[in-house]
Amino acid sequence: MHPAIRTRGLTRQFPGGFGISGLDLNVPQGSIYGFLGPNGAGKSTTIRLLLDLLRPDHGAIELFGRPLDRSHREALALVGALVESPSLYAHLSGRQNLEITRCLLDVPRARIDPVLRRVGLLESADRRVREYSLGMRQRLAIALALLGQPRLLILDEPSNGLDPAGILDMRTLLRQLADEGITVFVSSHLLSEIEQIASHVGVLHAGRLCFEGRLTELRGRVQARLLVRCDDARRATELLLAAGEIVARGDADTLVISLAHRSEAEINRLLVGHGVAVHHLARELASLETLFFDLTADPSLRGTA
Amino acid sequence: MTPLARAITAECLKLRGTLALWMCLIAPATVVGLYVLQVSFSKINPKTVADPAEPWSFFTQSILALWCFLMLPLFVTLQSALLAGLEHGDNQWKHLLALPLPRRVHYLAKALLVAGMILAGFVVLLLLIPVGGGLLMLLKPAFGLRGIPPWAELVTTAAKCLAASGLIAALQTWIAIRWRSFTVAVAVGMSATVIGFLVGQSERFGHWYPWSMPVQVLAGEGQHASFVVVAGLLGGLAVTALGLADFLRREVG
Image 1 (cartoon, chains in turn purple, brown):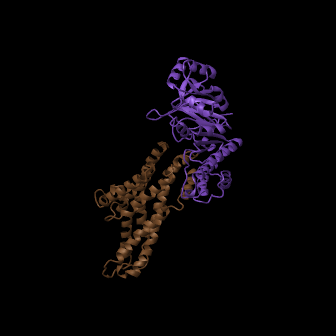
Image 2 (cartoon, chains in turn purple, orange):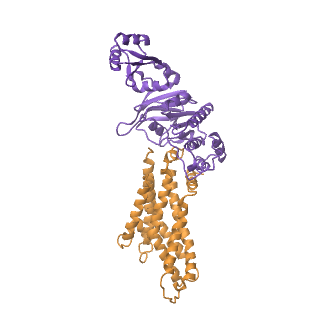
Image 3 (cartoon, each protein chain N blue to C red):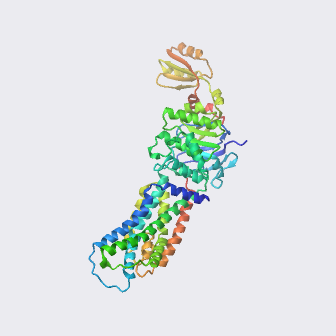
């Protein structure tokens, strides 16, 4: 079975060194693929390339095994997308907005009500979009993306601007879509959000893919971390670095130590033995946020993509 | 339906409730209304005219001249900017161009819709001319209007003016789509119209300047009419082709 998205050596550079370089994405069919990266990592550039809004400098894109480039755009018929903010005609109603895309896609008019119902906008369908809240606009944009019955949904930061209830609704909707066999490719900077819905993740940093695989693989890859608060963080850092530990500074008196070499008890003994008073010492379970931080900050943890 | 026909239908749907559609009525009505008002308040000595078509010819030529010289270039500027602005507003291009349609249909649909609205403007103008004439018959009998307008002459002249406006339409469509800013499109169109006010009166250069080509159909003895019709049509097609090539090359950031 072909991957929903497969890119090989996908490269697009912009002046100033921004862009992506040599991206090899493999998005399995039926997965919820969380595409993570800090601002400026190249997530939106990648999404625009996957939708033929930008042209690559090098590399190739396949959607469900079909090539995608400026002269072969048929594969886009399998895709529904929301790129950043919703693109809507505010002077028209929600239903009229859907009618425009329906007309362009040449799908039956009978598709409109089911997608409106699916995103919970059936009751508000005949109101003008300018009267919609941001959450309603976001849901209408999802409805537009679903209109053509896509096999792949590409969503760029779909939770942007949503309130907690809206985020919850969005999460539920994406899970339902995935249950129906639709592949969901979702970029987000809300790492905790991705952690709750994604089956697979790709982590992008400075235009390169640091990690790609199942979320469980990513969790297994990174060691637990130790948070230490002490009276002399500078000296403690020097001691630990000299002992071969990987140390990062949190706030002024906090150290974040990767538990790769010594146990927490040994680290405590080392510090106390050198006269550093330890106030707080706690093992931290790796959330996706910390994994992400590690991947984008520590080169030694990369290299699986 | 072909992708182009679907794109045109979609463009028509987008126009619902917009100023662009109303402008097809308002712009020609303003021209006819202004001219009727001007004549109504003018002092005219009654004279006997043997040929009843002569006052009609004068009346229609005057209205067409006002339309082509001033209102038409501004109308084209505004309509193309409004049409393109529908996509620039929320960057709808990123939605449209991610759909599985050939990219060219979006540009061609816009260009054809601008052309369609110019045609609609001309049709409304032609329909309002007898209405304005009827009003003058009541308000200003001294003007000498009688009977019905010379439709054949009127339609032929209007068709030539319409054809001669092809180049402006293509240029303004390209500018409005190429630059996101509404101000750029409007500033270019308004400036070009003002320049055309001067250049259009030049016997040597008037027929070379796109924004004064339509009025050249009416200038003098119509010696440049054939040239501006051909230049408007061919120039319009050429600029549309170039604008389309530019559009296909462009990316959506």
